[in-house]
Length: 203
Image 1 (cartoon, rainbow, N blue to C red):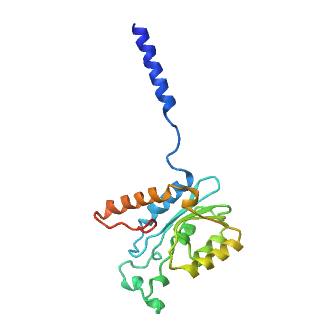
Image 2: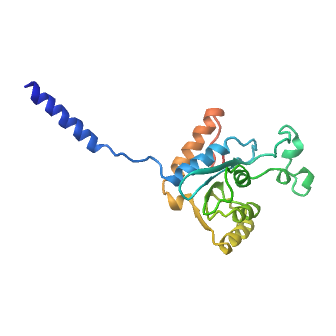
C-alpha cells in the first residue's frame, strides 16, 4: 500500500510538471520597452518623461537613456525649464537632451550596427539623425504625439530613406498597451501616491 501511494504521488507530481508552461512572461520587445519605461521614471522633466533602450541584434542591452539636462547644468535653475519657444534662451527645448540621444551617448559600444532602439515616444527628427548615423536599423516606439504631425513626417522621411524599419510596440505585441499602462501606473504610484492616470508613454 505504501508503494502504491508513493507511485501515485510521483504520477501526480509528473502530471503537474507537464501542465506547467516553462516560458517567458514577456517577449524581447516588451522587455526592452519595459526598460525604457523604467528609465523614463528617472527623468526630472515634469512635463514629459521619456526613456529609450538600445538592444543589439542578439538581444543584449547596449545603452539606456532618458530625457534631461546635460551634465553640470543645475536642475534647480528655472531658466532650463521655461517654456517660451519664441525665445531660445528661455525654452526648455534648447537645453534638454532627448532620451534617444542619451541612450546612444551611454552606449558601451559603437557603432550600433543592426541594433534596435526602443523609445517611449516616437523620435524627433534630431534624434532620428543620430539614430541613422550610429547604424541602428529598427525603431520601436510606444506612442506618438498627435499634434506633432509635421515633425513625425520629417522623421519618417529620413527613416524611410535610410532603410530603417519602424514599428509601434502594439504592432509587435498586441497586449503592450495593457501591461505598459500598468507598469507606468505602478512606477507613478510608488513614488507619487494618488497621481492621476495618463496615456502610455507619459510617465
